Amino acid sequence: MTDFQALGLHANLLKALERQGLTIPTPIQIQAIPHVMEGRDLMGLAQTGTGKTAAFGLPLLHRLMQIGKAPQPRTVRALILAPTRELVNQIADNIGKFGHGSHIRTTVVVGGASINKQMERLARGTDVLVATPGRLLDLLERQALTLAETRYLVLDEADQMLDLGFIHALRRIARLLPEKRQTLLFSATMPKQMEELATTYLREPVRVQVSPPGKAADKITQGVHFTPQGDKATVLRGYLSEHADELALVFSRTKHGAEKLMKLLDHWGFAAGSIHGNKSQGQRERTLQAFRNGDIKVLVATDVAARGIDIPGVRHVYNFDLPNVPENYVHRIGRTARAGAEGRAVAFCSPAEVGELRAIEKLMKIALPVVGGEHMAQMRHEPAQKPKAPQGRRQGVGPSGAGAGQKFGGRNQSRPQRRRSAA
Image 1 (cartoon, rainbow, N blue to C red):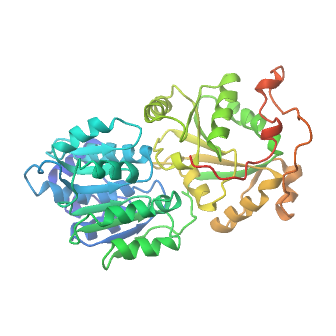
Image 2 (image 1 turned 90 degrees about the vertical axis):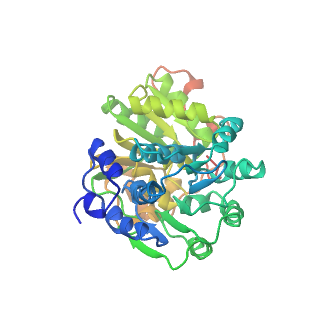
Image 3 (image 1 turned 180 degrees about the vertical axis):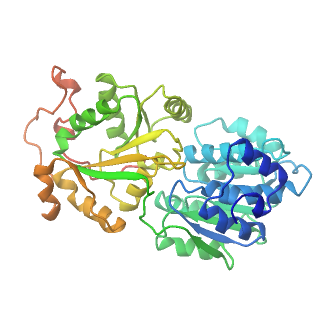
């Protein structure tokens, strides 16, 4: 099969794809779409940026378009669950584009938005509901909708939902769904707990996989820059200055760290913004839109926000803090080199993060090329250093001429923050 028409999709979908300039399906779409159209349960494993939304969205819409009548009040025909607000909005946006000009009604429910307005929209009934698990449960408890008529269920980025502790919410939702339904599960990785999830939700599923876990997109140029933790902000400043007109995404391990780094970059004159769990839904959406439009050139984010960022113009990803979970490195750098473009990813590694670097390289089965801090490169073969307890107030490394209060390497920033924080 070489084009979407050969997959047998509805004429309205083919027109929508043509308007978007999409003619050739990706490997995950070629493998998944025929099985979904046949009504089979499916487990899809593919790295981020491979077109998973279209792999389940197109055949789902194809089947819904054949119904030909509006849904009943408060009912949902197809339910798509995703772990973050950003990803929910991204999925809904794509579903809306694919279904443009048809009778398909799509509704979004996420936390941080008016629940009363969401209840009003759900009262009319919806063909496709895209939701985060927590807000969906809130609405179900208020009897704003029923899942008794739901015949299609999609779990997107299921590994991330498990990592965020949504397993209990998913179990509660599963009990409210009809036994007779089609279920699709998509994930970038396959942790052990995924087997339990698959057994609970799927019946004799087809399994499709288009890339091994830990494989990054071919057009991403990767590298590691070795640096003391207190020097990272200055190193980042140098990279950003070299590519001032290009979009850059910077990953911090914690919400507090992301916000503090964003404020420092803003002080240095960069057009910077941040998204993390302490931001309201409206703030996150406005910041992402500004980044997408190019009004913001540098976006500082945490891991939870990473999978909802689908902006083809991102040319650079900087891992300011290396992730505790090596698979998250793949998701982070997958925000660049999207839609066939080229991108660059640089990981900043302090002496205390050597263990994280080794875990990443083991997962990806490569040694990241050294692009900076060559004099410290030998530390990748030495035992990781434990951060020393601070003795007195250290002066951090900041821009020349900047006040001490603006420096990023002070006492609380001189070492990586080891405690995990929800984003």
